[in-house]
Length: 325
Ligand SMILES: Cc1cc2nc3c(=O)[nH]c(=O)nc-3n(C[C@H](O)[C@H](O)[C@H](O)COP(=O)(O)O)c2cc1C
Image 1 (cartoon, rainbow, N blue to C red):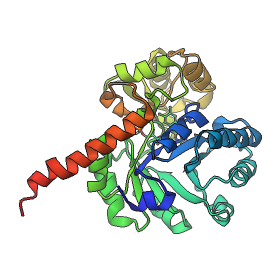
Image 2 (cartoon, protein in one colour; image 1 turned 90 degrees about the vertical axis):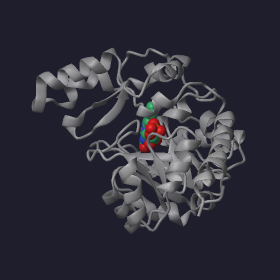
Image 3 (cartoon, helix red, strand yellow; image 1 turned 45 degrees about the vertical axis):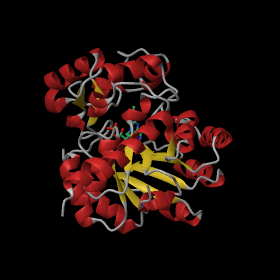
Image 4 (cartoon, rainbow, N blue to C red; image 1 turned 180 degrees about the vertical axis):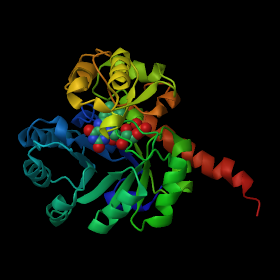
């Protein structure tokens, strides 16, 4: 399947694996790239630029296909060493970067000079247009369904994607709620050039996380995520668990007085405990509503092959049946 996204990134299938904290290690990125998609290493999960350089080397040993690095620009005062991370990406010969969070404008010249294509993750048409205006090569349009940070506008993909298609000139992929061949065909129908998946890729054999995480996703329905930190304008969609219920209770009782420090126990530094040790109630972890569509733990290649076969079957059989003109 050829789209502007497969052309832009030199990949076989229009499927991207979004950056995921403590999930997007070299093993997963390489598996996705080897299966014909675009795998992404999560930059900030590596505590220093040197560690990221090492992770890029490890990924290159596992695949000769293109892969990318996610750089999330956090709204915090003590900023990570972004120039160092950019250097590691450029010197590592990576050709794709997924940016997210704050405006990436400041970093675009050094990335573009190195021939790197930049796809910025946006949760609104407004931010997508800004990304286009500052020179990003593509956008990942992340609807309200998504795992992680859906922004504050709450527009689901059935509206957000066609609005992006009406407005954008650069290509975009649909992100949030994507799981299978049906998602891919729907995304293409709504104007996207491919799709980005987060939660679905966690429930794969190669995802280097504890099996408890994969089983929690398989067991969850579309009703099992919660929105937290709305009061801090840092809304996150997470899997419900005991820590999340405690967090929501604090949000209810403190109301507008809630500060980050009040919920630090539930959100800070919890990812290694959950993803590595499988202590599922250790805190809040990002998860999409799409968990309701995830029923198994295939290999990444089985998943991607299945998605592409299903997408082709929907287009050439089911949809063609309706085309009687
Ligand atoms: C466990 C987890 C961690 C994530 N961490 C990040 C991150 O560090 N940076 C980022 O840009 N997006 C992050 N995301 C968002 C994903 O890249 C992707 O946009 C999102 O999962 C898409 O929605 P879906 O889960 O419905 O597929 C994370 C998502 C999950 C599920």
